[in-house]
Length: 147
Image (cartoon, rainbow, N blue to C red; front, side, top):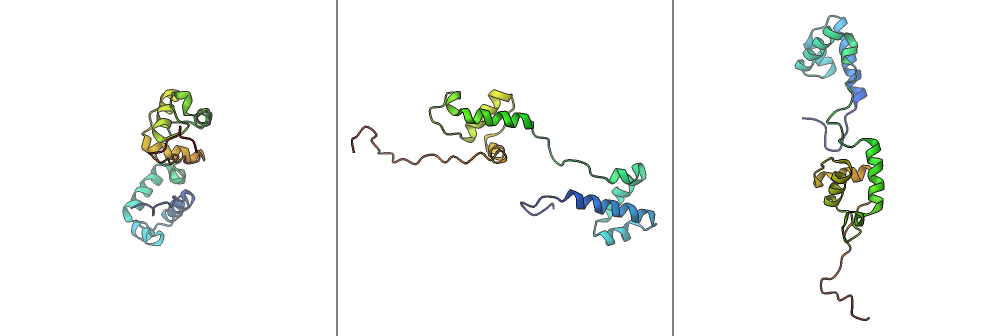
């Protein structure tokens, strides 16, 4: 199910709801009544109750970050900016254009971390690195001809 596309989870609101459930556990309400009040499925209330029974309200506190931890640390991302500023020519490429394939290769060379080229754009966006569309040129263009 999850959230609509592009909408981040509000971890504080989720924690507040779990802690509300903890208060209602103390009032002796059953899972169905708590679920109706908080608009939460019965199975979730049951899971929260077992966590509460094992560890109290602290067990229902924030769990921390969601998802996989990033492969590159914050300091490595900062170093990646230095790598990008050097340009792709430093890695033997003929043109000064960073493509996702090239950035992926540079990350592999510098940090020994593999990123699929299709995911590199997320890192570039996080670094506010500008998109670099290739310069459009006419294929029949003759650079040696005089104007």
